[in-house]
Length: 247
Image (cartoon, rainbow, N blue to C red; front, side):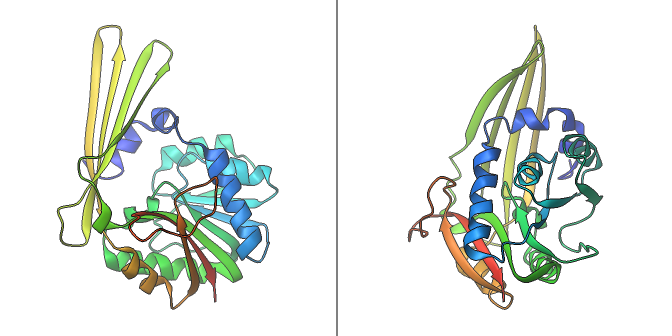
């Protein structure tokens, strides 16, 4: 199964899969970071935008928003959620926009969907080209050297007469520039059970490598992955929020 087929199959359930995510807190935090570090402009692009929940909050903050994703059913839902925004079907590794923007976001570890180091480098270059001077690129990432293959997160939720059980976790073999995001979804309706499982190829990189990639274009600040309190990254932490200001 390709990295987009599962999401196409379950696009109607994507928001359920992410029901435990506090989109409001994440969006508010990045808005605050843009006010602190950025040029305070109001043009915004969300890459890997999915069904547009983050964009909805940025619109409510007064931003002029656009989004891109590789999954058209997701974009169709995003357009319904955010009729004021513009959406395009594009690859984050080689996207183009008509006018540069002030803030580019990439939430939910979507930067790892670039898959390999060279496409990731292309993505960073495309982001830099798409930002105004003093603009901010904000995203979250995991350090391959701090991945616990035994760790996963899970939650359950209901829709109509069905129960959905979701589980996801990172897996890294300990070498190379690829890791896996393993997903498991179980839908139970009365006595009928449907299951989906997938293992997405994701780029594996450590934070020193990632910072080196960003340095030619950006002033980089690396924070703990905490949307409530802004704290510098701890030495042994492998989960971070990157705030990158275009030079």
